[in-house]
Length: 252
Image (cartoon, rainbow, N blue to C red):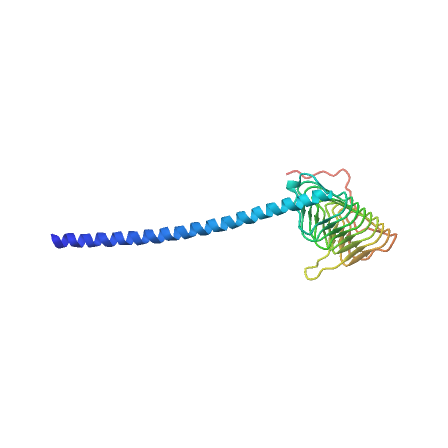
């Protein structure tokens, strides 16, 4: 009877030891994981607070300089942003690194700008994206849902709606219609498009680079341009419209 009790006690004791060891390891690991989580969270909070304070300083600096920030708490600036005189920035604009904005320019809501040089009296947005290498000359305009990259938009030229302008030079007083795309990439290399002065590009046109549009040329809406266009010329690649009179749809 004694031996039986001793045997049972040994089994129970080993069971207690295994539970204690397992519990201790679990508790120890739990403590380490909690500490790691708290450390990561604290670091993120510190970074977030630091960024928030930095943005407040940058906004205050811009406001003191005379920049008109509408709802400044929604606008994000970079420490190297350069503003000219009488610049207005609407809510929810993000200005990334290497941006210079000239006098009397107006940036509308939900615009994102990085690595761009903007001259005087320029209007941008809303919902525009200016990527690195963009230069907007005096009195030019970039409208809603337009993206530019490594492009030079000339004086008094306009890209008003829904367009992509990449690796492109646009001259003076040119108008780029809605939905125009500069097709600058063939899957291997990127090519440049040159649009001369006083060119009119109709809506929904594709300019397949490398291509040059001569001075005062006109591109008909819906065209796909793959060859150079001479000055004072009209270029069309639109298929002829066909019409069937008194046409009746087939019934099911």
